[in-house]
Amino acid sequence: MFSWSCASRGRGGSFGAVLGDPWGLGGASFPGVDGWDSGGVHVLVLGGTAEGRRLAGELAALPRVTRVTSSLAGRVADGVALPGEVRVGGFGGADGLAAWLREHRVDAVVDATHPFAERISGNAARAARAAGVPLLAVRRPGWEAGPGDRWVDVGSVAEAAAVVPSLGRRVFLSVGRQQLAPFAGVDPCWFLVRAVTAPSPPLPRHREVLLARGPFTVADERALLTRWGVDVVVTKDSGGTATVAKLTAARELGVPVLVVRRPAAPCGVRAVADVPGAVRWVAGLGRA
Image 1 (tube, rainbow, N blue to C red):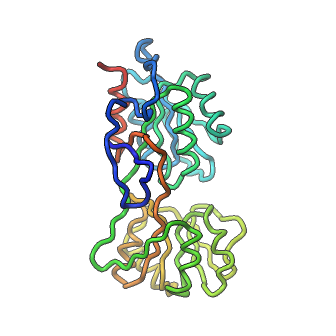
Image 2 (cartoon, rainbow, N blue to C red):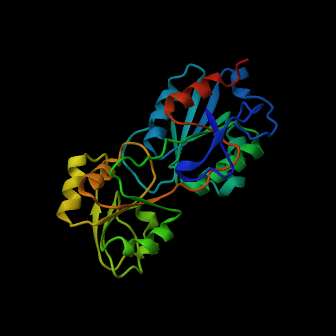
């Protein structure tokens, strides 16, 4: 288990323990987990990821957890049923989330959102602190370049849009449908845009939109890059295995990859790298 440093960004951030902060509140006072004493615990899972779906199921199976609520942004509907309750939509910022935590007597929050869900994670940190509720983040490890990879790190999607014409003209754009606007004015390039659901304008002028959901195999990605004559890939450092195959295919074909580094994480939030770590954390709350 580790805590995000205030300067943690991208793959090179350093992590260190928050001593004397067992609840992951970054030093804020915490009166205790009421649910453990009353025999029932309510856990809010901020989800929308594979980790969030798996976590909801595993927490629901814990004997002392009587209520699990999964909160989804609602942008992508995959039809997968979730154990427990499901809440779709925003809370109205950090203040709204803090009020919801109090109203629904939430005993613990697990932030299992996408590594690039910067606004949601920030609101969760502020709300948990205000409501006095322990918070944990599940952050899958980022990708690491290996021998033969031709990666170029950039700090934002906007920076990727500025750099991409210098690397190629036929671009496989895999940054999610919410991040396409910066590429709308990059007219020298043609873009193959892959997304789960149809993106909304503004979009690149020269484009082909491909609707598909991972995971993808290396053979799938190699065929895709070859068929469309892709000479540069743009992706975010999402980590995990669902979309990593495109990086292997790019390496095999000698195609450069623009990798957008992860945004800075909220300060002082305790984090684990996987679902088992989160389950252990919840199971250990309220114990001496």
